[in-house]
Image (cartoon, rainbow, N blue to C red; front, side, top):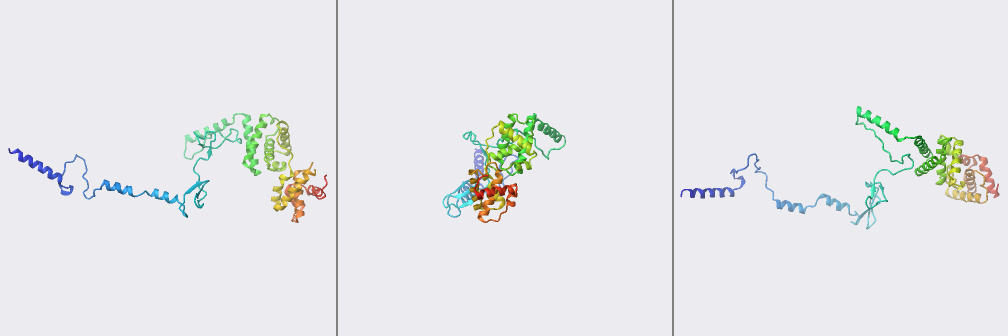
Length: 352
């Protein structure tokens, strides 16, 4: 009978202990090693924190909405060709953007592989640009650097295995130098290297100069793409003489059947007019005179550069421009006598 009150008193004590707040100073049973919670830290309400996060928008979303709107009319902005343009009012919001996407596309397999990386294949290298190279690093020292140097030397030797590849590398280097010295388009180098490959496959290099073939390939490529360059200009910067150039050109023209015809005097007019500072009207008049010289047979058997120089001089005289025979002859790299003879034929209107 005496145990019942003690049991009730214990239960009451337990209930009173559970109803007390944590800051009442009543110790609670905790596992060993647990650190007590700091009573000074206010308790957070999970429901209130979730509500606060849902009402406040992140800064990135606000920035995105602000930058995607037109600053003039709040219209929709579209990105095309590196520019951000408003679709409503046409305002260019940003120009010359950096495109961080792939540089090349593969049109053979757009569905499964729409883009690719790396440089394209080129005909201006003997391996079509598919070989690998062992680079150099300043972070490697000691025995490993010496080993990489030996590997690089052996790798460079293995890239050129035969004499045929060695001749091709030398010719490609000379063609690249000529294209840069003559300030020719980069695409012309591909044409010249492809022409040299055809000449090497036809076994035309035996007994002839490789430098002469390189100069002839550049000259033929200029004639093919209508970029006027004379033999004298090409041989002036080439390592070959005019005789070596002529021998290589005759061999390719005879064996390969080059698709080139006689050079028209009108092809040299833009360059001569630019060098002499002639007006557009003078150049147009010189082009009419060049067509007349071809149709009437005045240009037959004559240097087309000299005929073009005479046409420019005649047009300048007819329009009253200040232009002398010596200046025109120096720009065309011909003698004043050549300019004077064609000028007399053009003014008389008689053939040679």
